[in-house]
Image 1 (tube, rainbow, N blue to C red):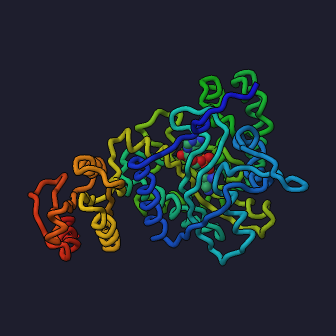
Image 2 (cartoon, rainbow, N blue to C red; image 1 turned 180 degrees about the vertical axis):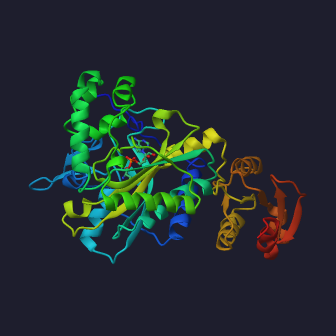
Image 3 (cartoon, rainbow, N blue to C red; image 1 turned 90 degrees about the vertical axis):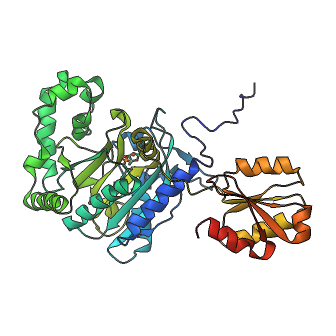
Length: 423
Ligand code: HAM
């Protein structure tokens, strides 16, 4: 029996058509403006990489163990590849391959793929806006990176977004903390949830992230990494907090904030949208990573960055009532019942003058063309019937936004439209 064919977007994915897709355009444009102002340059990298590249982001994490879209290609021998589940590994791999000068400051807008159980705000293909900055441990860079994400939300118009920060220490102080936490958890293993009871040794920090009441109760007085930072980590963390205060970024400290990927050291942070249900309210997050470049074959190079889920930001905008101005849609629509030459030539001239313009096709009736003009959302209909064509004029009819109908010479119509549109 052949499998039933589904001609629908795969489960957990979706299409975005205009005008809703205008919100995506707008988010990317706002993001680019904010981060390019701070010297970040766009990186475009492949949507798939060698499986091993992504393995480096965390062999004990769900993202790598359970959610990776991996496959073998048609090579001989076949290569083991995976669709990008997140942006950091790709950017660091590209850095190691090309060795641009340091600091290397990159931004991306990238579809990311995770085989998760789809639900509101959680998809199998989502889109991340992100930055990565490589080449320095200076904690003031942490302040810049966190501040840029806060600036992006503010620029988009979101008001109810909160920032939590933590420090996860480094190779110097984390091993001892990890051992202490492991011993603490093992002594209370019977009080933990089923999932985490068996995963203590593999990744004890993840237990702190568990939201189940039994885990929360059992770990209420668990040792905290921030109380056990080594000198340099403690100094860096203090400087980050001082910098966030000095630059006006509101934050709270959350010693339980551990993130879902393995590469983090020192500063980690997450932004939550209060208007969204807590399971999917993380609108962005990131942190520092120490060993990622080295594990991908490069020189030891510290880095920091964040990823911000566009769909979550759009959901938060909806929940907060933030209207993202659509930039799509035409401004002028040419209605031509005089043979089509005006529609053909005038739309081209309008577009050349920077005016978004469209027209109808197939020599439709005046009524049908006018309906199309109205549906297009254009502010102006430019009408050329046989009479106007004969007299070399264009009738300009406002479709929305008020104003009366006027008639202008064909030669002056572009200037007239410009004026009406306030250009
Ligand atoms: P992440 O926290 O796994 O971090 O993802 C970043 C953001 O992507 C999340 O805060 C969320 O907004 C969005 N997101 C993640 N998974 C989904 C999903 N299934 N559906 C919808 N949105 C989702 C990272 O990916 C790191 N690479 C961030 C980073 C950059 N750290 C350092 N540099």
